[in-house]
Image (cartoon, rainbow, N blue to C red):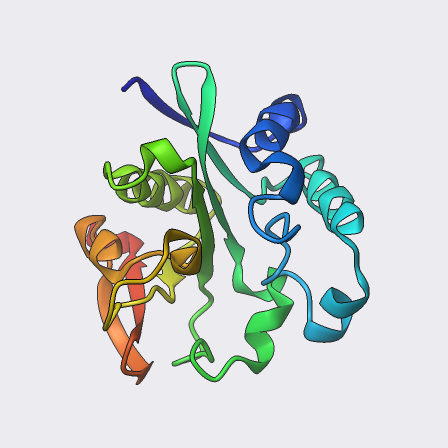
Length: 188
């Protein structure tokens, strides 16, 4: 595999559309689940979510990174400053553990035939670099530590094992299967 990872930009939008397909990765989400509060999510359509993500792709700060095998888009990771993710405001699992300003990783999508090949770890490493370049001092995630095998679409928040391989450490846990993991920029 010839893996390259880049910030989502307007010139890469068509690649993300190709990767996500007609259903916006999963259930017409278009990676807006964490960016919208529940009320906003419930009244928005898949097309509206797609337009919102495209708007973010046109903004100064990319809403995520897209991975390629050569020129083929194969993977996605969504990240940014925590205040950009409205759904986290009321999350019991992901509520802040302190008052540190953090960036968060909230979602992954890897094309089916590329899963279980370590791409999530590489996306996380690229996310660390991207966040660091934009002034982040901590990158945080809320992955799942499966108690039982889960179908791939239900681990869109990532697996704790991938976060560990990318250098994240557990800093809290409010639910047995959901560690809070952080990467501290000054540690590297």
